[in-house]
Image (cartoon, rainbow over all chains, first blue to last red; front, side, top):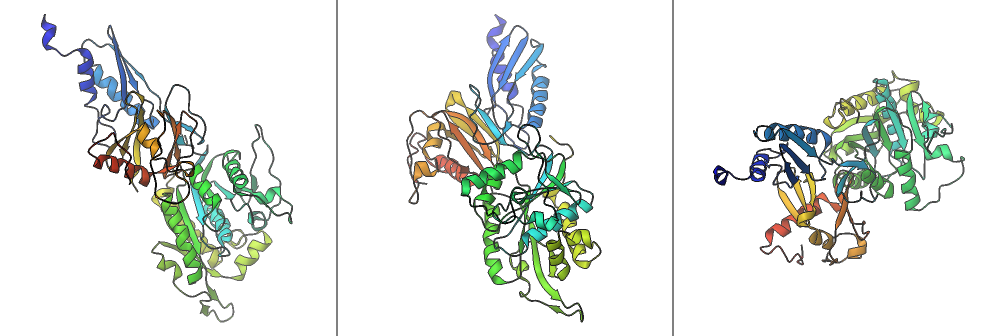
Length: 362
Length: 108
């Protein structure tokens, strides 16, 4: 019979599927192991795509390509594709039965970009910077949230001038507190002024998870996360739980701070979070009378890190007073040069590639 | 940092296939991957990493960890291994450098 010289339909289908390259790679979908069983019955073919970390949009593209290729066979009228895209979900949940799945790290619904503000050393004004940066981003017209991840020493409520209690929503969810046009969550909202948080790491980590997952953040362009100083549990939990899109580090110019900042920088590198730059706080003191600049903590520290210097925030009364009074300088005196410095930082942050907002929200 | 573009468990061949963003392709037989689990339960604290043999380990699922690691879940409930991309890549390379693929018990 004439069929003897023609390879069987399965072989021909596989050969054809080998013509389809995986996007971003020179390799084809068969050699990547994506193609599982291929079943042919009458004029129909079913192609099983193995469960993998494939993204929805890539899968959609490949479905189109496979259908396009296989319908060129005269004996094939229908192409069915069975596939499992990667599932979003929290880590450490048991996999789905009978289906080996890859669980993508889960984004926070509605949150487009997450920015971590960190420092190696305490007392460099990290929360002050985080608060003013968040407000500056909001005044550029963005929807902004601020997550105070300093569980042991929450200072955002004081700096933002609110002691509101977050309202409970359905399904054990929490509404963030709104102030000056941004959404806030902080451990401070759940504590008396004097009560200390005396908790070990695992409890703190579960609070951070709740702040990420159980707060009804609604639609945000940027979620600014004010990290506690150092490179401990909280920073690591955050880096593991969610895809951080970028980080900025805050330092003062002196060498002691820089030593610790280097550790913070290394941490971001190890967990593969892009560093957008460094902000030098308490950069200099300008005498209000004679306008002479005095570099109390030395000079040029931030440059030594080799990171892009996003801004140099001077040591001025208005910043300190604004934080203590619950009216950050960006809100209370937006025309002040120091507020302008924060706007400049915010503009540089949104201009980075990492902080470009995706067109659609998944 | 090397970053995986695609992770595909292939149960028929008992391996995990990883495509990296530089187009390198690595295969990790389940027993090899599990044996080199970096977690403290398997490795203890300190000292050189060693191969910890598991009986016919089956991969149930994989969690992506942040931007930097993967966390395989095994059918015996073991789920503490966090393999950084750098470590996973080095496991793939050291397996490639072996001529015999069936003895993963070598130091990295």
